[in-house]
Image (cartoon, rainbow, N blue to C red; front, side, top):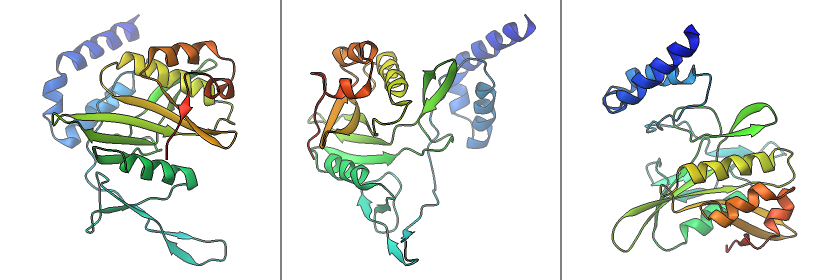
Length: 228
């Protein structure tokens, strides 16, 4: 009873003083972030703005030689040339290039796969466990009226056992944050063709809840060919 009352009170204070907490220094905000992480139930936490990253610029090949990683423009953290080195698999790189070529794209962010205050994490249920999926990419585009919209694009294989639970978690996140994102798209290669599903669409979220397998979902009418 004491723990329940304490959690209720702390959550109430964190909500009540949310704006004042955001005005504190990064170090003090981290203290409150840690308090939120102590909650028995997952709580929304604001993303911290990254200031610096340590990013690999080369990769070691099988023969021991090093090669430069491909570099991409318009990442939110760039080197002195305005470029960001990306250690992506073959079709993650294709997705980045395709999104950068879309009209209006002004910036993008490689969402860290690790647990950190500058990584967007979405909870999902896997059996009796609550886990976190971290979508790969966030893109920002400017509309004709000058406003900025945000897109989440997450390319992933369908062969993993947790693929469907992750999709369900992302669908619930899309519903809970309706209006925040222009697109929340998942992309996968199915039968040699890249297919995409936009989870901001109610019909897509309904299909995620109804299907038995991820392959069935990507072959359904709620999925579309992903144009690269």
